[in-house]
Every structure is written in C-alpha cells, then in structure tokens.
Image 1 (cartoon, rainbow, N blue to C red):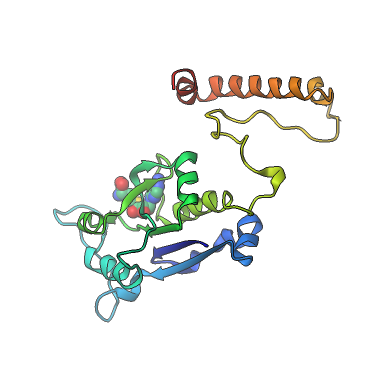
Image 2: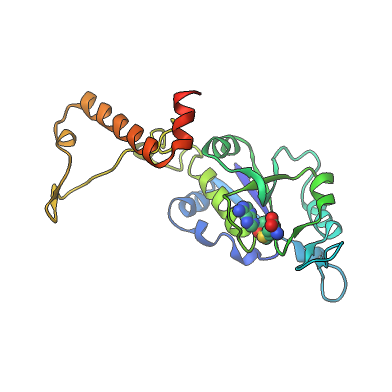
Length: 230
Ligand code: SAH
C-alpha cells in the first residue's frame, strides 16, 4: 500500500482536503495511508522548542537540525525505501513526471518546513531531497505536501475510474489539454464546436490534438519548445 509519512508542526492540517473526494474515498478504501509525526514531540525543554535564531543574524527563526533529526530517526528506519522529501522553494520544481515516479514508489516521507527554513546540516545528513511546488513562498510546507500527495494518490491503481484514467491529461504528453464542453449544446448563444457533435472519432482526436498544440504554443512557450525539440 502506498504510504505517506509527514513530519510537521501542524499535524492537525492532515488529511485536511485529502479526506474528501477522490483522495478521501481512496484513503477510506486503504488504497493509501497517511501518517503524521509532530516534530514538536522531539522539541527541547519545557516549551518543546523546535527553532532558534539564525546563525549569522537576520530575521526569523530556523528549524533545529537536532530536533528534526530526532523526529525523523524515531519514525523512519534506515532501510525505509521511500524517498525523503523536504518541501522547499529552493527544491526541484515538481512536475507530473516526478509525481508519476513517486506514485510508483512504496510512498513518500515528507518534511514540512516552517519559519525561515531548516538547518542545512540535517538536510545533508538525512539526505533530504528538496522539492518545490512553484516559484512563490508559502508560510509552511504543509500545503505543498498536501499538493504533492494529492497529485500522487490520484495516479494510484484503482483510485481514478477507467473513464478518467489520466492518460490524455495536461502534461502527460508534454501538452496542455484541449478544451472541454458538455450539455447544453447551446448556452448564452455559444455553441459547442461542430466537430465534437460529428461522431467522427478520428476527426475529433485530430481537432483535440490541434487545440492542445495551439494552447500550449500560446500559453506555455516553455513547454512547446520541449515538444518541438525534445
Ligand atoms: N526563507 C525561505 C522560505 C521559507 S517558507 C526561502 O526564502 O527560501 C517556510 C517553509 O514553507 C519552507 O521551509 C518550506 O517547507 C515551505 N515552502 C514555502 N514555499 C514553498 C514552495 N514554493 N514549495 C514547497 N515548499 C515551500
């Protein structure tokens, strides 16, 4: 079973949105499991301190290496085959290709940062792979972890219905997805493109591919370049 173990200072944020809809049903059916570890359980002193001021000065606080390492070591066996990820704006930008790879593994171990970040030494010593969900700053790694887990869980065998099996989706073939329409056939004077009512599956497939290419060219020249010259 695919299992996520999440290290966080806010375990009550989990499963949060992942208790609902597709991921929630899959969680109930035990297609995947979620385990949270409160980093503060290994905090120091009466106040269970987990952070301290940055060496060299500057604003904010830094998550302590000794506290995070103790928390990780208490819960994760050295032989655990799952990748150990640290959600971080400095990380490798998460892509659908990485999501697919993570979903084929036994699961993931995720550390959620807080404050200014995490002491570099624990990142090195516990070989945490930094993963970013985009070029913007969140206040903590929890929403990033939820994002990564959600993207993985929907790809697990049996989680998505056959109809929605995910193969033609945006990014799966390097392109953004074609536009969708449903009933009514005419709405506020706008009609569905004729080809979609033609019943000609080859023409429909060709139209969808052309639309996907056009959208990708217009909206994401960075992706389009990779399609043209892989
Ligand atoms: N000072 C840091 C940002 C800290 S934000 C910097 O400039 O790089 C606090 C925590 O939120 C981070 O440790 C990380 O775990 C999480 N976080 C913020 N933005 C993120 C992003 N884009 N992707 C993944 N995690 C992020």
